Image 1: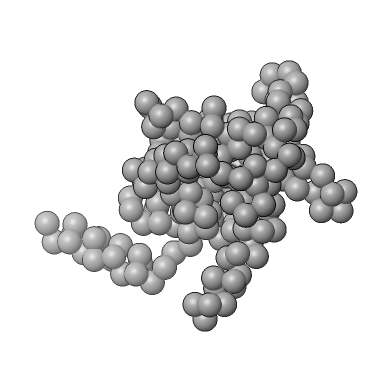
Image 2: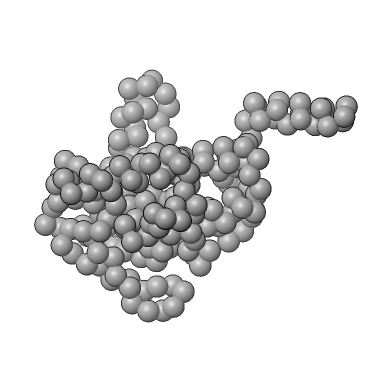
Length: 198
């Protein structure tokens, strides 16, 4: 979950993240596939990212880098289900070439079962945390919205945010993902006011 807050990745992008997508030297993460569990059909499905623009390489924050590094260091000790011996195939949207997702190379798996994390298990865990904190429930996708809002509040250019989120349209980024808070409005007015008096 913390990785989503630090990168803005979609849930399927987090679930489908494999170690070969991380460049430890450059401190980047490349989004080139997704993974989801299809409950009705009861099987795992690998896919290319949502759109052409969803293929992207994201510079990692120090926090994201530390999280990924700690998960990678614990990899040798994690429980692994026989399901991780599977290799899933999908068609790369950019090239039309058949590609593979090797389940054993997944970055995030359930530490209790050794299975890949299902989309719904992230939401269920978040709901439990919300209930314990006595706040209104929200889902994993809300973390992507939070990332976008905090990025704009920190001064990130909207076109840069669009690229980081993998959106085809700046309108999607700004209208659906960036939410103006009372604090950000007050800060913007103070900033405007100080500019006017300079």
